[in-house]
Image 1 (cartoon, rainbow, N blue to C red):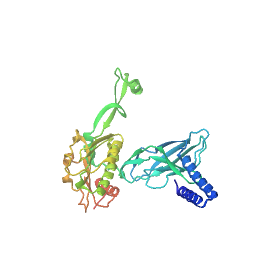
Image 2: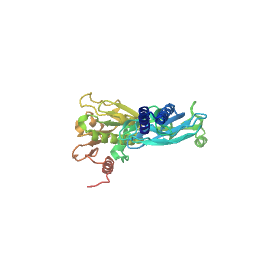
Image 3: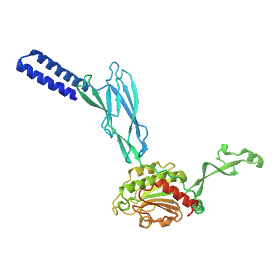
Image 4: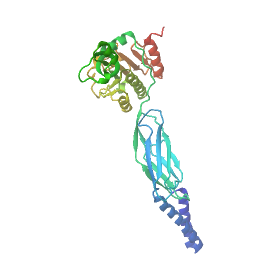
Length: 378
């Protein structure tokens, strides 16, 4: 019931009491009319509007800080009944008011609209439940009806915008040494060979077959680059919550770079969590959206996965490299470490990027790229 409805009901009670006290039937009639209007308004709002709703987020995953667009489609399924004006409320909205306002909808009408929800934190972002609030024509009664149930969308961490590193001579040599060729149906042409029973006739190279008077087929190759191991330190003693969020953002940026470079990235945390993504970094970004810090010493130290001797290491940690529970020295020149410091960072090395408090990971990464490529002097 609205404020106007409460005032109308109180007026009806006061007028009814005055009519009984002074014996005035006119006041009793006015009181009955006021009470009847409030009763009719309450009964009218109890009827659910004949609306069908479909609520869908524009994306199943969104990066932290990017507004989440929610699309809503309303249709009046009644044959002869119009839906009154109403307001749409979202319990997950940060604002107390309605997220959408819907006008009067005639029978068979369809309305499509959208609204945005902020994404301040990574993790699960709730959508709804959505409520449809209706009000009578006199503004005496108001009631909410459930429109759509609760849904969730995964919010990725803020992905740091990092450019791929320019390969140095020793790094490229190490990458080629650990790469291997796999014969298959790739698009990279390698050589010609004699036709064998069972070969695809579409692979016959007719100009060469005519020249050498025998059937020759194309041979293809696929270069499998070493997998990238992305290590994230999650101990509470290593970083404050604010620094840890910056570390997760840096890890997300490195995951995108690694997936584009090697095609396969494996996430390993100091808490023992391990996730692998091939082709796209979606699986790793999903895990980074839900990763949390753990108490120091609450879990055994992380172990290197099988085949780590052939992997390229990208590590994100807090403090000194020597305090890591992972044997980082085993990777030799095949490692890059982003070390976040809570105070003034030390001088960085060729494979260690030291990031101090308040420094931008994107700017420091660009300086690190220039240092490794040899274009920065002094």
